Length: 209
Ligand code: OGA
Ligand code: NI
Image 1 (cartoon, rainbow, N blue to C red):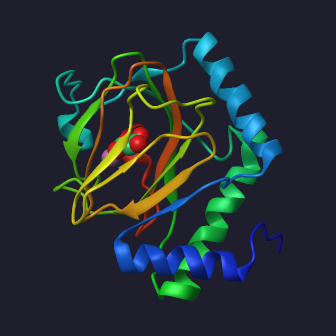
Image 2: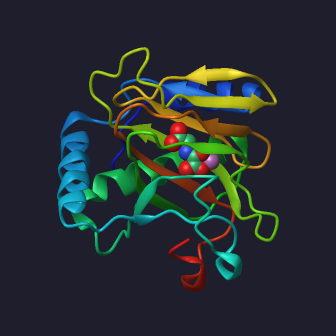
Image 3: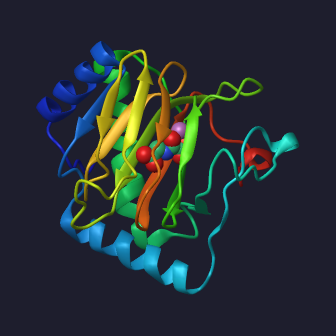
């Protein structure tokens, strides 16, 4: 099986995740994949395929602009085969969660997220009350030349306070059930690939959240 990272890499990262409920990993994705992700992101922006993000479970979905103002494009492993390497890396993360943390996870759901200038996401947990399938949240930022004052930081509020700048190719992984977090207002366009590693495979009816 193809592997992208050493077992020391995963050991180190996942033990930090277990100890602190989050981990920040800089320079995460291979360069070629990053370029493909960026190209696809921008292509889909130009094709206007992004949709206003929703809140809550499938039944009560509503766009609530006071809570979040990002736009999303949901990824699909079969359709988006040009970024298969990304999905293989998530598979590797899942295998290592089992090996290092004895944490059994199955499946994932990811989207591209686009916060226009002024965009934000108020404090929330990523696990919905009605559906506790999301175990780990993962965000990888695609912002070149991010500078202090540009805003859009990810702020963790509980169980610890931490402000994380959305720097290019920085990955953040955190526990979806306990980490209260928000996205501070972004003063310029903010791009990321964001997703969740699930306890059970995602059902077709749950896709598109
Ligand atoms: C989310 C979220 C954080 C970020 O999409 O649920 O909290 O930094 N994203 O984009
Ligand atoms: Ni979140």
